[in-house]
Amino acid sequence: MSAFLRGYLSVLVFGFAAVAMVGAMLGAGRLLRPSRPQPQKYIAYESGVDPVGTGWSQSQVRYYIFALLFVMFDVEAVFIFPWAIRLEALGIFGLVEMLIFIVILALGLVYAWRKGVLRWV
Amino acid sequence: MPLILGVDLSAYWATTLLKVLVVLGLIPAGAIILGYVFLLKMMSHMQSRLGPMEAGPHGSLQLVADGLKFIQKEDIFPERSDRFVFAAAPIVVLLSTFLLYIVIPAGPRLIVEDLDTGIFFALAVSSLSVLGILMAGWASANKYSLIGALRAAGQLIAYELPLILAVVGVVIQAGTMSLQGIVMAQAEGEIFGVGIIGNPFIFTQLIGFMLFLVAAQAELTQAPFDMPVAESELVAGFMTEYTGFRFLFFFMGEFGTAFAFSAIGATLFLGGWYVPGVEGTLADVLGPLVLGAKIMAVAFFIFWFRFSYPRLREDQLQAFAWKLLIPLALVNIAVTGVLKVAF
Image 1 (tube, rainbow over the protein chains, first blue to last red):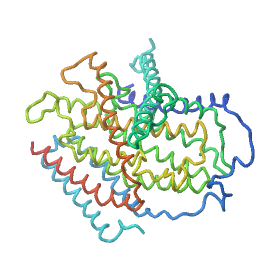
Image 2 (tube, rainbow over the protein chains, first blue to last red):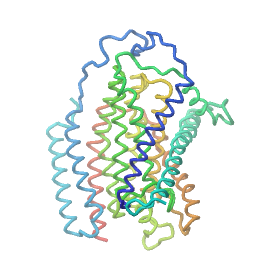
Image 3 (cartoon, chains in turn brown, red):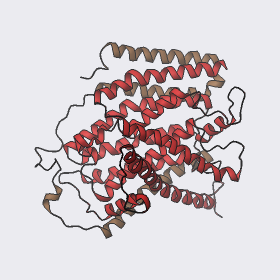
Image 4 (cartoon, one colour):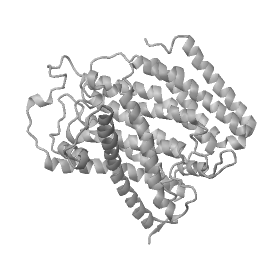
C-alpha cells in the first residue's frame, strides 16, 4: 500500500472511530439515564403552546438564487487551488491566464449584482 | 510482523490507535478549555459578573458537572420525527469535527496524517457539519428547528467561499496545501532578508487572515452570525428538540470545531508549532505548547467578536459576504499571485 493511500486509510479509520465513540457513549448513557415515557414529552416544542399543523410546513427559501451563484463560484475555487500550488513553476503565463479567469468571474458577479440578483427578495 | 503489500501494518495500526485515542481526548478537552476560559469566564468578566464559581476552584469544573448532568437526562425522540435521521445528525456533526483534527500538525512528527491535500481536506470536512445541522433541523419535525437549519444552510452558502478564497492566498505563498508544508514555508521564510522568526503569513496575508476570521466566525455559527441558533427567536434553532447526550454532542461539535479552526488559523497565518532555532524531539515537546498558545490567541478574537457584536439580519449576512468579502478575496488572490511571480 502506498503512503498516499495509507494517509486516506487513516481518514477512514478516524471516521469509523468517531461513529464508534458516539455509539459507545450513547450505549453507556442508556445504563445511566431514566426512561419514563409520557405522551406529553414527545410533542414538538413550540414555546409551551400546542403545535399548530405539522412540523414540516412550507417555508420560502429566499436565498435560493444565492445558492445558484454559490455553485458557480465553488467550482471556480476547485480550479484555483491546483493553480495556486504550481504558480511558481507556471510563471507569468499561468498568472495572466488565471487573472483572465478571475476577471471573467468577477464580471459575472458584477453582472448578477447589476441585475439585482444580490438583492433580498 | 505481518507485511501486507510491503507495509508493516502492525506498527501502522498501533500508531493509528494511539492517534485515535489522543484525538478522542483532545476534542472534549479543547471544548472544555474554550468553553470555560471564554464562554464562561471571559464573557462574564466582560459583562462585569463572575460567572459560575461553585464547581471546583473558580468554577473550573462547571462544564464537567454540566456534562455529567446531560448524561442523566432522558433520551427523547419527538413524535413525528424522522427517527433515523434524528439520531444520525449529531454523529455527522461530530464526525466532521473529528476528521478536522487529522491534518493539524502540533510538531514535526505530531500529526495524524500529513495529507498532500491538507487544508483542502480540512475545508471539505468542515462543511460536512452543515449537512448534520440540516439533518437535525429537518428530522426534528419542529418549525424552529427547520428554520434554524435553513438559516445554517444560507450561512454556508454565504461564507464557504470567503473561507476557501482566503486560504488560497496562503497556498499561493507556500506553494503547497499540506499544513506541515505551510508551517515549514513560514519557518524558512524571511522578512526583508531577516529570517530569525521566519515569515508568519499574517504579515503578508493580513487581509486573508481577517477574511478567514470573519468566515470562520460564520462557519462556527458564533455571534454575530448565530442566526441558526438565535435564542431570542428560535429557542435553540436546530437543537431545540435534542436532549441529554445528543445535545452534548452538538455542544462538543461546536466547541471542538472552534478549537480546530483556531488551530488551522494559527497554522496558516501565525506560523503553527514552529519555534525558531528548535529542532528534533525538543520541537515535538515545545510545538504543542506554542500551538496551544496561538490557538488561544485566535480563539480569543473569535469569542471577543462573539460577545461584542449584535446579531446580523439574514439579508445583511448575504450582502456582507457577496458584496464585500468575496470581491475582497478575489482581489487578494490576484495581488498575491502578481507579487509571487514578480518576486
